[in-house]
Structure formats: C-alpha cells, structure tokens
Image 1 (cartoon, helix red, strand yellow):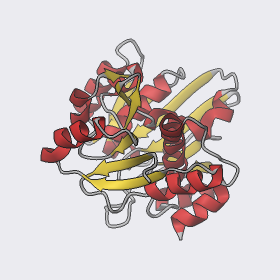
Image 2 (cartoon, helix red, strand yellow):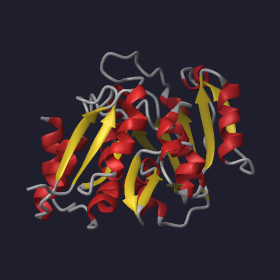
Image 3 (cartoon, rainbow, N blue to C red):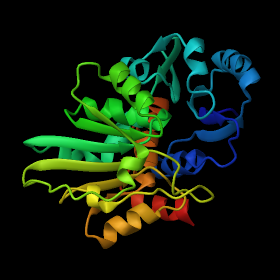
Image 4 (cartoon, helix red, strand yellow):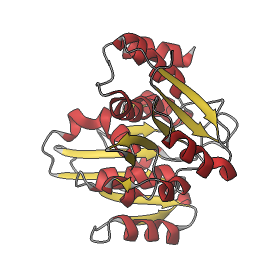
Length: 284
C-alpha cells in the first residue's frame, strides 16, 4: 500500500543528510510517511516535476544544487522571500498546484532568534562570501535590521548583490583579503549591540582551502557562525571558541531549514525535543 512521501533532489545527491533528518522526525512524530533522495540531472528536472505533479502520494521535495534556480520556472507560485533570494529549495503541493519556497533564510536565523528578539542600539554582520548561501543570509539579516559588510574575492559582485537584495540599505563591501590581514581598529563600547561574523563559503570545509581570517576584526561580544557542516567544528569556529566568542555551527542552519520544510510537507511541526540525538546521528 502506498503512503505519502517527500524527497530531496540534486546532482549529486547521495551525500545529502536530509533523509536522515526527515526520517528521524517522521519516526519521532509517528507519521506514516517516507522521505527519500532522488538523483535528478539538470536535463531531467522538467520531466521529474511533470511526473511528480501526477503522483497523489508526493508531498514535495527539497531542492539542492544545481536546481535551485532552474526549478523556479517549473512551479506555479513562488513565495515572495524565495523570489527575493532568487532561489527555491523547497517545492510543495499547495492548492492544487506547486509552490516554491526558500527555507534557508529561516533556517539561518533560527539559532539567532533569542538574540534577535532583544532590542539593540545597533546590529552589524560581517559576511564572508557572495554565493548562493550568502543571498539567503543577506535577505534574512536585512529583514532583521542588520547593517552588513559583505566580503568577497570580487567587491563589485558583493556591491551588486547588496544593491539587488537591499537597494535602500546602508551596507558596505570589502575584498576577501581585508579580513585576512590584521587591523588595529579600536572597537567602541559594544554594550547593547549585536555583532555577527559569518563564513558563508565552503572555505574551511574538508578538502577545501582554509578560511584565512584574522580575529582582530571581531568586535567584543560577537557571535561567530559557520555554515560548513564537515567538519562541524571548523578551524574558524575552533579559534572563535578559544578566544571566548559564542559560536553557531553549520548543523544549526541545516536542521533549521529542514524543520521549516518538514512542516510544509507533512502538516505538523518537526519534533525538536530530541535535537541532541539527531545531531549525534548526523555526526556519527
């Protein structure tokens, strides 16, 4: 007998942790449904979507690279946040059609919600990277009233990104090398301020070049956030912890964005009371 299912698609896809996350939550919630992975090549994407439209058991899919932009032309409605980001990572069956969402922004913000619920005199984030993840992070933070400094290999690309995503914002750009070199800047009193340092690149990931970052650029009281998931404690986060800064690892964003998708697929909030056990599964 068939039963409801959702899945994650991409090329490649075998490495995805999404089946482990959603499968764990389905079991915890007692929901009789499946979550799978499906290898979909770029030339197969349109046929995949067309076939799933006619499958009564299909509840939707998470979308990974390289399909996050291409899938936008294949759905019936795009959520305004996804439209601003310019990428869809979640497709769901909705009102007889298909709707495209982006849960990366919500997933990124989830571990920061307690801090963002406070009132601050000033909020600033330094973002390393100008790729797809940075688009979601920039969108999320500008909606929270955060002034940004975006650093990339090409500062012109960083400026174009900010002009597109928040044209009225008073943000700044810098070359990647700016944060690799020490600074003698004397930070003012940060009491009542919110400061965030984000690695939104693959630098520091296993098999990739390290993130060359000098901690003289980190204001007192900052939170250091790395979206890399392998290794979970990157050299950037390890040094941040050693220096006494609060840290957020990449699993926090991964689990947060999955939780937002889970509720859209299966109609119930993801059961989050066993997140510690889930983390152990994902890192074993």
